[in-house]
Length: 182
Image (cartoon, rainbow, N blue to C red):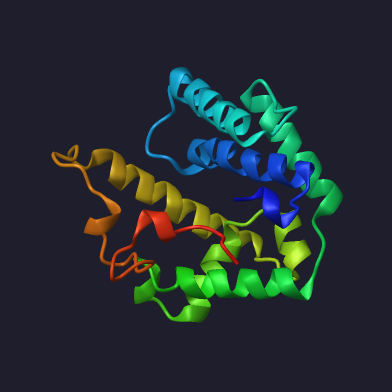
Protein backbone atom coordinates (compact mmCIF):
# COMPACT_ATOMS: atom_id res chain seq x y z
CA UNK A 1 0.00 0.00 0.00
CA UNK A 2 2.81 2.45 0.83
CA UNK A 3 5.14 1.50 -2.02
CA UNK A 4 2.95 2.97 -4.74
CA UNK A 5 3.34 6.51 -3.32
CA UNK A 6 7.13 6.67 -3.67
CA UNK A 7 7.78 7.31 0.02
CA UNK A 8 11.52 7.45 0.59
CA UNK A 9 13.20 4.77 2.67
CA UNK A 10 14.48 7.29 5.24
CA UNK A 11 10.95 8.64 5.59
CA UNK A 12 9.60 5.13 6.20
CA UNK A 13 12.27 4.50 8.85
CA UNK A 14 11.46 7.82 10.50
CA UNK A 15 7.73 7.08 10.69
CA UNK A 16 8.55 3.67 12.15
CA UNK A 17 10.70 5.39 14.80
CA UNK A 18 7.79 7.64 15.73
CA UNK A 19 5.95 4.54 16.93
CA UNK A 20 8.81 3.43 19.21
CA UNK A 21 9.76 6.79 20.72
CA UNK A 22 6.42 7.36 22.52
CA UNK A 23 8.18 5.36 25.24
CA UNK A 24 9.82 8.70 26.10
CA UNK A 25 6.36 10.27 26.46
CA UNK A 26 5.32 7.45 28.77
CA UNK A 27 8.47 8.00 30.83
CA UNK A 28 7.46 11.63 31.34
CA UNK A 29 3.68 11.34 31.67
CA UNK A 30 2.72 7.69 32.19
CA UNK A 31 1.09 6.46 35.37
CA UNK A 32 3.82 3.89 36.04
CA UNK A 33 7.32 3.10 34.84
CA UNK A 34 7.44 0.70 31.92
CA UNK A 35 8.97 -2.69 32.55
CA UNK A 36 12.12 -3.42 30.51
CA UNK A 37 10.21 -6.27 28.86
CA UNK A 38 7.55 -3.82 27.63
CA UNK A 39 10.25 -1.59 26.16
CA UNK A 40 11.94 -4.54 24.47
CA UNK A 41 8.58 -5.77 23.16
CA UNK A 42 7.87 -2.39 21.53
CA UNK A 43 11.22 -2.48 19.74
CA UNK A 44 10.76 -6.12 18.70
CA UNK A 45 7.24 -5.44 17.39
CA UNK A 46 8.29 -2.52 15.19
CA UNK A 47 11.41 -4.32 13.97
CA UNK A 48 9.13 -7.17 12.87
CA UNK A 49 6.74 -4.74 11.21
CA UNK A 50 9.70 -3.18 9.39
CA UNK A 51 10.77 -6.58 8.10
CA UNK A 52 7.25 -7.26 6.79
CA UNK A 53 7.16 -3.85 5.10
CA UNK A 54 10.62 -4.23 3.57
CA UNK A 55 12.11 -1.39 5.64
CA UNK A 56 15.85 -2.00 5.94
CA UNK A 57 18.54 -0.74 8.30
CA UNK A 58 16.25 -0.58 11.30
CA UNK A 59 17.83 0.08 14.71
CA UNK A 60 18.39 -2.83 17.08
CA UNK A 61 17.27 -1.08 20.24
CA UNK A 62 15.32 1.80 21.73
CA UNK A 63 18.37 4.08 21.83
CA UNK A 64 18.92 3.48 18.12
CA UNK A 65 15.32 4.40 17.31
CA UNK A 66 15.64 7.55 19.44
CA UNK A 67 18.85 8.55 17.62
CA UNK A 68 17.19 7.89 14.24
CA UNK A 69 14.18 10.03 15.15
CA UNK A 70 16.20 12.88 16.66
CA UNK A 71 18.68 12.96 13.77
CA UNK A 72 15.95 12.94 11.13
CA UNK A 73 14.08 15.76 12.86
CA UNK A 74 17.23 17.85 13.34
CA UNK A 75 18.08 17.51 9.66
CA UNK A 76 14.63 17.83 8.10
CA UNK A 77 12.15 19.67 10.30
CA UNK A 78 11.37 22.97 8.60
CA UNK A 79 8.34 25.12 8.01
CA UNK A 80 6.02 24.45 5.09
CA UNK A 81 2.53 25.81 4.55
CA UNK A 82 1.24 22.25 4.11
CA UNK A 83 2.85 21.04 7.33
CA UNK A 84 1.34 23.94 9.24
CA UNK A 85 -2.07 23.25 7.70
CA UNK A 86 -1.95 19.60 8.82
CA UNK A 87 -0.77 20.62 12.30
CA UNK A 88 -3.55 23.21 12.65
CA UNK A 89 -6.16 20.66 11.57
CA UNK A 90 -4.78 18.11 14.02
CA UNK A 91 -4.94 20.61 16.88
CA UNK A 92 -8.50 21.43 15.87
CA UNK A 93 -9.43 17.75 15.92
CA UNK A 94 -7.74 17.27 19.28
CA UNK A 95 -9.99 19.95 20.77
CA UNK A 96 -13.02 17.72 20.05
CA UNK A 97 -11.78 14.92 22.34
CA UNK A 98 -12.12 14.78 26.12
CA UNK A 99 -10.99 16.55 28.22
CA UNK A 100 -10.10 19.26 25.66
CA UNK A 101 -13.62 19.57 24.28
CA UNK A 102 -14.65 21.15 27.60
CA UNK A 103 -12.18 23.99 26.98
CA UNK A 104 -12.24 26.88 24.55
CA UNK A 105 -10.35 25.90 21.39
CA UNK A 106 -7.58 28.48 21.94
CA UNK A 107 -6.92 27.13 25.45
CA UNK A 108 -6.82 23.50 24.24
CA UNK A 109 -4.42 24.53 21.49
CA UNK A 110 -2.13 26.43 23.88
CA UNK A 111 -2.06 23.51 26.34
CA UNK A 112 -1.11 21.18 23.52
CA UNK A 113 1.70 23.42 22.31
CA UNK A 114 3.06 23.43 25.89
CA UNK A 115 3.66 19.69 25.45
CA UNK A 116 5.44 19.99 22.08
CA UNK A 117 9.20 19.82 21.71
CA UNK A 118 10.84 23.22 21.02
CA UNK A 119 12.14 22.14 17.59
CA UNK A 120 8.61 21.14 16.54
CA UNK A 121 7.22 24.50 17.67
CA UNK A 122 9.92 26.26 15.62
CA UNK A 123 9.26 24.14 12.54
CA UNK A 124 5.53 24.88 12.72
CA UNK A 125 6.09 28.53 13.64
CA UNK A 126 3.91 28.20 16.70
CA UNK A 127 4.46 30.67 19.53
CA UNK A 128 6.80 29.31 22.19
CA UNK A 129 4.94 28.84 25.50
CA UNK A 130 6.32 30.56 28.56
CA UNK A 131 8.26 28.55 31.10
CA UNK A 132 5.31 28.92 33.51
CA UNK A 133 2.80 27.68 30.92
CA UNK A 134 4.97 24.69 30.09
CA UNK A 135 5.47 23.87 33.80
CA UNK A 136 1.72 24.09 34.43
CA UNK A 137 0.89 21.82 31.49
CA UNK A 138 3.50 19.26 32.56
CA UNK A 139 2.21 19.39 36.15
CA UNK A 140 -1.30 18.77 34.84
CA UNK A 141 -0.12 15.74 32.89
CA UNK A 142 1.67 14.35 35.95
CA UNK A 143 -1.47 14.94 38.05
CA UNK A 144 -3.47 13.04 35.45
CA UNK A 145 -0.99 10.17 35.72
CA UNK A 146 -1.36 10.10 39.52
CA UNK A 147 -5.14 9.87 39.22
CA UNK A 148 -4.96 7.24 36.49
CA UNK A 149 -2.56 5.14 38.55
CA UNK A 150 -5.06 5.01 41.40
CA UNK A 151 -8.06 3.98 39.33
CA UNK A 152 -9.20 0.37 39.70
CA UNK A 153 -8.09 -1.99 36.93
CA UNK A 154 -10.53 -2.37 34.05
CA UNK A 155 -12.65 -5.45 34.33
CA UNK A 156 -13.65 -5.52 30.66
CA UNK A 157 -11.82 -4.76 27.45
CA UNK A 158 -12.57 -1.42 25.78
CA UNK A 159 -12.56 -1.38 22.00
CA UNK A 160 -12.68 1.48 19.51
CA UNK A 161 -16.34 0.66 18.90
CA UNK A 162 -17.00 1.46 22.58
CA UNK A 163 -15.54 4.97 22.28
CA UNK A 164 -18.24 7.23 20.90
CA UNK A 165 -15.75 10.08 20.41
CA UNK A 166 -13.95 8.09 17.70
CA UNK A 167 -15.91 8.92 14.56
CA UNK A 168 -13.66 7.62 11.78
CA UNK A 169 -16.17 5.10 10.43
CA UNK A 170 -19.56 5.95 11.98
CA UNK A 171 -21.36 3.53 9.67
CA UNK A 172 -18.79 0.76 10.07
CA UNK A 173 -16.34 -0.39 7.41
CA UNK A 174 -15.55 -3.23 5.05
CA UNK A 175 -11.92 -4.28 5.58
CA UNK A 176 -11.55 -5.24 1.91
CA UNK A 177 -12.38 -1.67 0.87
CA UNK A 178 -9.87 0.08 3.17
CA UNK A 179 -6.58 1.23 1.71
CA UNK A 180 -5.05 3.44 -0.93
CA UNK A 181 -6.67 2.53 -4.21
CA UNK A 182 -6.52 6.00 -5.85
